[in-house]
Image (cartoon, rainbow, N blue to C red; front, side, top):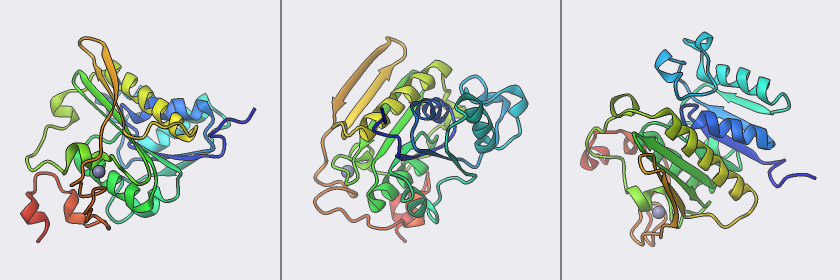
Length: 246
Ligand SMILES: [Zn+2]
């Protein structure tokens, strides 16, 4: 029997704590083609949570190391390697090559860029984030309604702690990355999961799944949405809105 996603093309943005388990689940599920995009190298501090990498991978390109391991796990996997981060100059063109984007990046700038690029290219996206004991995953349809900006509005005006500063718990990203892959497969199977927000509290082990609603004034999918192209200054963390728009 052919699965609903046997011919689907899926792009994983960020091969980190979330992207590693998500990529394993998607490759094992047999998606038609799996793109992986990251510009980072494996660091020894990654190994406790980025489960595609071993000690010998330290210093290697994450994308290449991940591909080596994924090919061992799933020899039939069709992999496409992108040794780059998602950038304002490549985002729309890159996501448009795929049917679905799975975004587990570690910074808000990339998350908003991925959200905007997918809306412009009309591609669905599943976002995920995990910091300390709190994890979330959100499936967004090709036209938003709701989208990532309905929840978070914009790149934070203040510098926010990154994963290294705030701390990432290995089992948390493993679980949230798996939930992200689960939502991705549901999208590919045609299930109505757009707008579903999965949250997980690692302290209490309580998970919830609920629908979020579109914000009428959302800048990406609202009634008077105005984001229609990728303006690079929009994706800089710690820069206030007035500086971004000048
Ligand atoms: Zn929106």
